[in-house]
Amino acid sequence: MEFLRKIYGFLLDTIQTLLLVFAVFLVIYVFLFRPFQVSGNSMYPTFLDKQYVLTNIIALKFGQPKYGDTIVFKAPNDSEKDYIKRVIGVPGDRIMVRNGDVYVNEQLLNQNEYLPSSVKTYGGSFLKENASVLVPADSYFVMGDNRNGSSDSREWGFVPLRSIVGRSFFVYWPLNRMGVVNNPHN
View 1 (cartoon, rainbow, N blue to C red):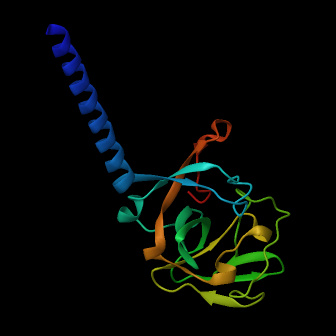
View 2 (view 1 turned 90 degrees about the vertical axis):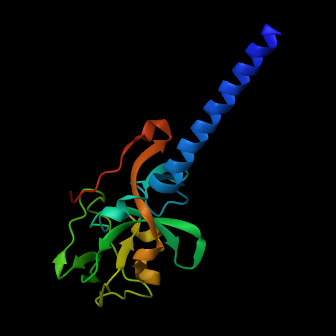
């Protein structure tokens, strides 16, 4: 009988521990951080295909996305998919691409922290070469770091604030690429 009581106590402790772990995981997943798998090479060299990053979903409660943040958001053409891109323009900014360079409010955008100087950026179907667009309130202009291989705001326009899931802040897989995702403008 003593043996059964010990087994019962062990099983009860195990179930309680598992429920606690599940509850903590659920709170973290729903309210704080969410994993995201990079799909494709649109953010190369910053992120690689199949990398896993943690996205801070509570950060938007305390502040808006800033220049240089890498954000995860609902894809404009398919709300079942998430995209990851870099914030280039915030509300009120005027964005233009000219001769392979990006201009924000008529100032050349310094991208040396995350892009080689040889990378050129050209217009798309939404943001045409030598034309400018004004970023509306509660919207953002985003681009992938792999400018030639990215479907981004140059093609489909602005990302509304309500579509943003959060800011990516930590690469956790693969282990050899593990590290903090830095904003070059901070």
